[in-house]
Length: 150
Image 1 (cartoon, rainbow, N blue to C red):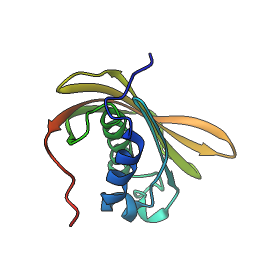
Image 2: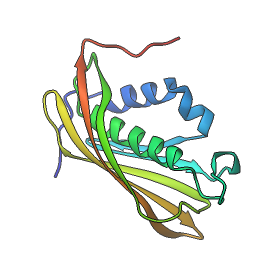
Image 3: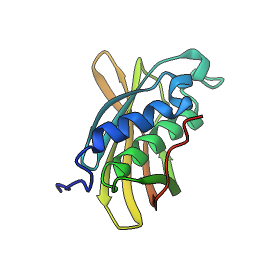
Image 4: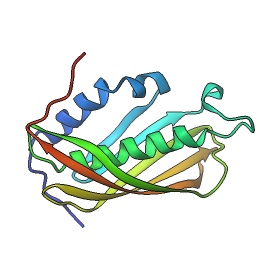
């Protein structure tokens, strides 16, 4: 399904908001792409983000899935609004082992207030992809809200 953004400058707004999320900087996340109703975030492997078995921690996997889902939804929201997660469900499908991880989100149903998004996290090693998590999330549009700059 193709969506038409309510803000012609959605990509600039999404990228600026992404850059304000200090968790993205802390983890080493990169916003690879954003389109109308889509978002892809990349996270290189970092042993400091792994659990005791060497897998990417489930909390980190969830963080990148949620962030991608939020920005996919945000891309369709009007200017002078903000996005916040309302709820999500994540299925951890396989051990998160890879050289790099990508969270790929796509809006299923945009709404005036609530938007439903799916996010898939894949682990990539030597070009081979393994799905490690699937998330379904609901995001809310907060009109008149603004990102905090400090």
